[in-house]
Every structure is written in structure tokens, then in C-alpha cells.
Length: 233
Image (cartoon, rainbow, N blue to C red):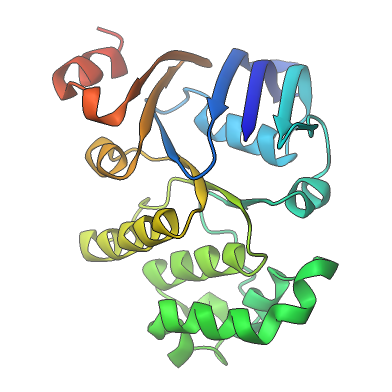
């Protein structure tokens, strides 16, 4: 479904990704774990078109999307839930969600998808007329997830969803991700919580210093070995 071949990318003259290759099959969850500065967020941004691809190839459903704008990658069926939520604080919850359905193909389904999101996250339904800037951290993350789902993507890129959240909210979000997996969504997850990542994922990739160090099936992961490799021991 998503094929990444020897990708390099970064920020201007600073290269972060070094020949990253990864293949993701439809309907699976792939988790990327690794220390801060490993290049995980850079990889997701490069796939989504937020950062330029300087070398290599990214194809989605056998179509080359490397270097396309975020608008075009989203139209192809990819959607990103960014690190730090990135919600529109001066817009209402309702309007934030509607922004997720801005693509022409999504607009006829706005009402039905709003109902689905509010059923998924009842707390958002209670706050739909409120400004997003007054939401708690957990509610803001729910809003970021809901906004992503408004376009009904076939593949979801999720960047650090548990960052700064209480454990009860994190568990609620990961239960949501598990339901998305059961519904057939393909997920590429970047997450610092290795235990939650492995519990959700089919495959786990360890990334360090801009490279994929290894990829294993989740049920084959030895936590002690993973943590040694995580810290470069």
C-alpha cells in the first residue's frame, strides 16, 4: 500500500533521513519507535508532503507521491494527525472538524461524518460550539483525530498521540485506534510509549539517527532487546 524506498529528507541543508526504506501493507498497523531526534516526525512529514523529498521514492497505491503537496497526498487517501494537535484554536470544535472535510470529495458527507465523530468522542459533541482553544489537552487530541477522520482516509499517519496526556485519555485514544484498525484502516504510528505501540501494532520499526535499525513483527519483540537498541547499547 505504502512503499518507501531509500528516502532522504530534512530541513533545508540539514538532512535527517538516511536511505529510509519501509513497506506497509493495507489494513495493518506499523509502529515506529525510537529516541527523540531519531527522525520519526520528519519521516511522517515527508510522507505527508509537509517536507521536501530530496532523494528516493514514496509511492502509495502504486502512485508516486514523493514531493507532492499535502493537499494532493490527502486527496490520495492519506491523512496526518500531527504532533502537538495543531488545531485551529480560534475556531469552534464544529468548524475544526469541518476543515477536515475540505477536499471536494469529502464535502457531501460532512453531516454524516460529524455524527460519527461525535458518537466516537461524546465530549466533543458537548463542546461543538465552543472555541477549540479552551479544550483540555485530551479533548484537543480527540479533535485532531476527529478532524483527520472527516476525510475518511484509507491510511492514517499518527504522530505522538499520547504526548502530555493523562493515562486514562491515552487509553481512550488507543482504544479508538484499535477500532480504526478493526474497521480496515491502515495506520503508521509514531509513539514514545513502546508498550502501547507494540500492543496495537502488527509490525514495529526501531528508528535511530535517521535510519530504520530493524523491523520485526510485534509478537516477536523482546522488550529488553528493544530498549537496549533504543538507547544504542
